[in-house]
Image 1 (tube, rainbow, N blue to C red):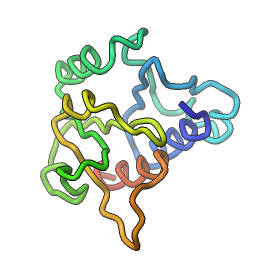
Image 2: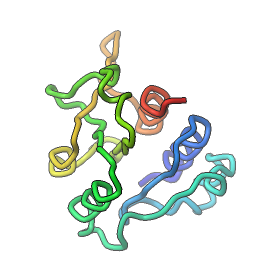
Image 3: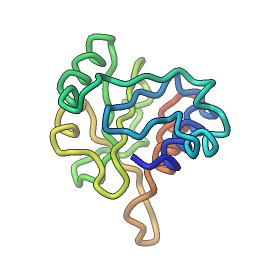
Length: 146
């Protein structure tokens, strides 16, 4: 929802060889000036689109579309039952969509439940979470096969 985070996510997605960025209708416009600036123009380099035009199309219809295209989904969430991002089965997936939530609130419970995996980034020194853009970069690096 934050143009700075969207720009940073695009920049990391481009740098770490992601195929595309898929947005929900609740996401801020990646063509917003601040998002473009933070992305260093990568919003014009990496393919992107919205998964549906209306808020009620996510997650049900969006998840169905991803599955119909052969994707497995990985929700990045701080749930206690989440698997480590280091799990080899994640990297072995041929087509994996990494699902990120909003800063602060994260993903809705229904979205997490609809995903094939719930994934957590192991952290140290009492740190419990990362900024969504930083978490995205870690996930893109670990799971993107670069």
